[in-house]
Length: 108
Image 1 (tube, rainbow, N blue to C red):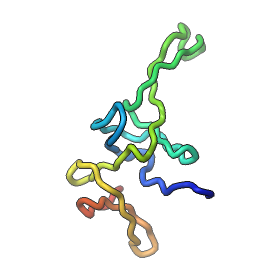
Image 2 (cartoon, rainbow, N blue to C red; image 1 turned 135 degrees about the vertical axis):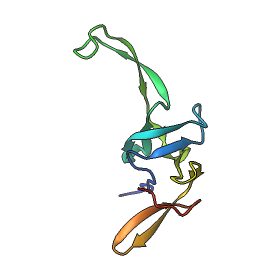
Image 3 (cartoon, helix red, strand yellow; image 1 turned 120 degrees about the vertical axis):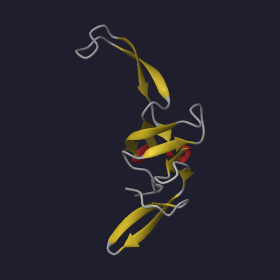
């Protein structure tokens, strides 16, 4: 792991976008790409992709799909209040758990 940052979000998390064209929106993380420090979030950073005809799109044409967004522009949503929060880690016996810094609530 040379010069890779710690990624605080996981697939399935609900996140808040704090910068860029989609600032203020929230969405569910579909995929995290650690090598590029990016995440793909449902309905965020939509791009038009030109596709050739194939079995899924027999007509081909232009398809709207999500593009990656840098993880520095994403914040986890607090499970209690629904506000954007920072993520902390603490040990629960042998297990490392994530918690919301705002409310202290554990992130499932």
